[in-house]
Image 1 (cartoon, rainbow, N blue to C red):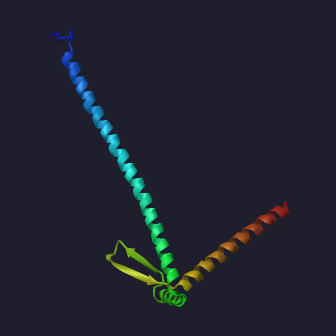
Image 2 (image 1 turned 60 degrees about the horizontal axis):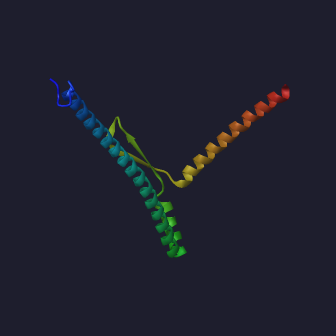
Length: 137
């Protein structure tokens, strides 16, 4: 079977060419989709960042318009009634129950101060031991 141009394998060349065109088109389309998805995710991240910045600006602007006495009153109310809450979940026993442990800011600060003192005392003891070792040598 010779084709019009004298090639014996005209059919196979046509099939191979069509396969190549289809495969390369799919690859190029896939690359285009990946590029668009990456661009969308980067734009979404920057938009989210700008939204947070605008929200912060709005809050700051709002706080500037509120009288100082009102702000102090709200700050005191928040400190007294809405102190940080630590939520613990027990996934083994109770998946639906949530135990809420309320701790005041002062309690957390005291714990932090004790931790800092422990760290400082251990560091000082360690440094004193090293200095004693250096002095002995």
